[in-house]
Length: 467
Ligand SMILES: *[C@@H]1O[C@H](CO)[C@@H](O)[C@H](O)[C@H]1NC(C)=O
Image (cartoon, rainbow, N blue to C red; front, side):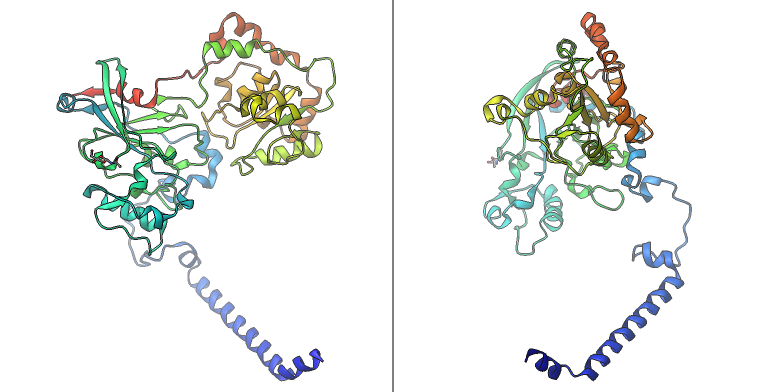
C-alpha cells in the first residue's frame, strides 16, 4: 500500500528532473569555484576581505610572529621564547603618591569561565564605573556575552565584576618589606570604583584573552593604560603552551614588571613548584620502593586528567598502556581503579594519593601538558616523592631543575618502543645515586633551583621606586 502511494506522489519523471537539476547546479558551482581560484588562489583563500588588491607595500614585514600564530609551531616557540627588549624593570611611583598613604594596587582579574553566568540575573544589580572603563565594559559585553538582550546602562556594570572567582570582594590592606624603603603599606582592591586612583594595576587572569589573529590576544580586554599607573603581570601555574601570547613581546612589553614562571620570561621568577632545602632533603630521604633485583609485574603507572595535552603525551600514554602493561589511574586511557583504602575523602589530598599509588611501581610517568621552557609543575617531584624513577616529557630545560641522572627523558629515544625496552632492562640503582649527594648538601639538588619568593604583591612592592 505504502509503496503505491509514494510512487503516485513522486512520478518517475519528476525524480529524474530533480536529480538532473541538482547535478547541473553542482557543475555550475564547481566551475564557479575553479574560476575564482584560477583568478588568484591566494587572494580568495587567505587574504582578509579588507585588503586592497591594488595596494602598494612599502617595505616587507619580516616579523614572523605578526604573520603566523605561535601555535603554528608551538614546540619551536616554546623552546626559544622571543626576547623582551626592555631591560629596566621597576615600578616608578611619584613621591606624592607615597605621601597620600598606602599604595593602591588594583587587581585586574577578569573572571574567567563566565560561560555559565546568568547575565540577565547579574545585570539586575549594577555598580557605577568610571568613564575610563566604559570602552572596556562595552567591549566585554559585545565579545564575551554577545547577547543583545543583555543591556547595561552607560556608566554602570554588573556588580558581579567587582568580585573575584570565588565570589568574594578582595579589598584588604597589607604591608611588605621593601629592600629600599623598609616596610611599605598597600591596599589591594577589586573595586572598579577605585580603578582610576590606583597606583599599580596587577593583571592576573589572562586566561580569556586569546584570539586567532595577530596580535593573538585581545588588547581591549586589558584596562586602559593611565599615565600615572604602573602595570604588573602575575602569571604562573599555567603553561605558555596554552597561552602563547603571554610569551610574546607585544604582550609582555606592556608591563613594568612581570612576576611568575617560566623564569625565562619573568623579571621576578616565582615557580609553580618552589624547591626548598628542606624539600630537597625530604625527597633525598625517600627510599626506592621497588627492589632493584626483582622484576616488577607492572613497570609504570600514571594519573593524568587533561587528555588534550599540547604535546605527545597522549601518544605516549596510549603506547605505554597498550604495549607496556602500564596502569592509568586518571581519566586518560583509564584502566585501573584506586585501591579501596585510598578512595575515601579522609585519606589525604590528591597529591598524597597519587604518590601512594605510584609507590608500587619502579617508574612513574611525569608528563606535562606541553613542552615549554621553564614550565615545570609538581609532576616530576611527585614521582621522586613516591620513590619511583620519573619517565619525563615536558620542559626542554628540565635537567636544570632536578638532580643529575635522576630521570629518563622520553624524548631522547628514537621511538617509544626503544624507551619501553630501556625502561624494562636498565639497571635502576644508578638513578638513585643523587640521594647520597643531596643528603650531604641539599643545595646540590639542582643547578638552577627555583626557590619560593615573596607573595606577588610583595614582589611588586619590593620593586617600587619613588621618584
Ligand atoms: C567600591 O568603592 C566605593 C567607593 O569607595 C564604595 O562606595 C562602594 O560601595 C564599593 N563597592 C562595593 C561593591 O563594595
